Length: 84
Length: 140
Image (cartoon, rainbow over all chains, first blue to last red; front, side, top):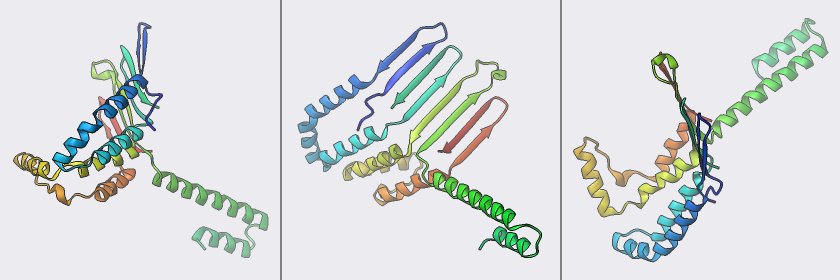
């Protein structure tokens, strides 16, 4: 499954905090992928690659991103990108 | 029978320790070997690659810490992308790499070979420590 609870959190030392959930982004990505699938199939015929295999690989990569974490702790701002 | 157990039994036979003490020592050995096996199993099952960077405030700049955790599964999934490169594109990619001094035949690369490399990453430990920066790369 794709990391639905992933988010980006920015925390500034002055106190403000921004939390951005990535769920809408994943949803948009899935919708765009579904809409473009026929075009990818046609392109796959021309290039000699399987669209199903390409989509399966992409899905596997998205699913594998779960538990990926990037955290930067600066004196001014703390940034946390989490694919939970 | 390992060396430690043999020594314990010899001491028991020579009367240097009692049966109770021998049993306690054997139990302690069993815990240690079990812990060592568990540690080995955990190491073999490492799931993430961790990169930690810590800059020192004495460097004149504000200290910054970077913490990155990448699942091994992501690396394994990523290497499969190589198999998706079309044959005609591979020639162009190899030409471009050759012009940059990299002689690599992509047709010889198999996903299982790359997965073997990813598997060996479980044993990777890199520690860089100078006056200003500490960098650690390890599998956990």
